[in-house]
Image (cartoon, rainbow, N blue to C red; front, top):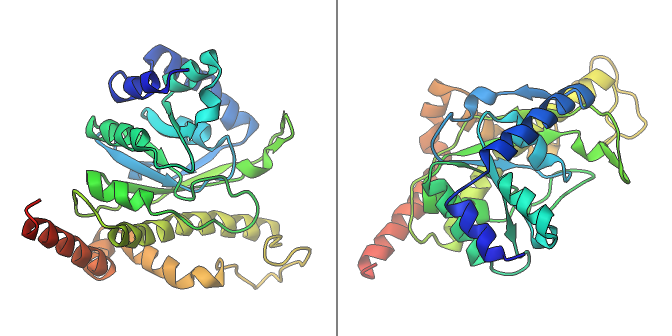
Length: 292
């Protein structure tokens, strides 16, 4: 299928309302009943205007589940192989997906993403770049930081937990799925951010996603009384709490300060984002001195 046409429709027309809301009407009760879907923190997602949803990626179900959780249409990238069949490509595009050529610098995908945000819609980004099924979260790529700086759109950290256990071959089995949303993060807008600046912003975003994910994992461990990831087969004593991965403690503390609440966030924002702001000012000064 012609990928140029798919990108053009995502940039201009957007989702097909009848198809989108019909599919949503079918999937939403299915996810709630069959997957026992729970949602926390939806009030942090802006009701309108551009927004970047930064989430971890565990299963092919993630964009579908997240799209049904939000109360507004959601756009996201999908690997180009999924659009080879004409009917499948049309359906995915009608539901908000647009193709990406993974492993290559896909400028068309980036242009489409920027156009969608400029129009005031929501875009889902998986900073890990691919699915990370077992174990801890993967390492993020700096694309989400670059996008946040280029567009100035707020970034909402989101974690999804449980979808990796739903699929067994071609069988979709019932399993508890949880979604938790954190407070939005904002960054200064920079026309041409450097790789270092984009990486610095990504390093501020990803711990906030980790914070949501660790919280969901801690709740699961507390309920089960066993931590199969870190201590497989070992029952936890009743007086032991599970704080999350020790290696991410410092990052989670910074994320907590940035997302704790209106007063705490306001007091900590200058300290947390000092490095990012300094890099942004340096990038702006460099651009002015070079006549950009």
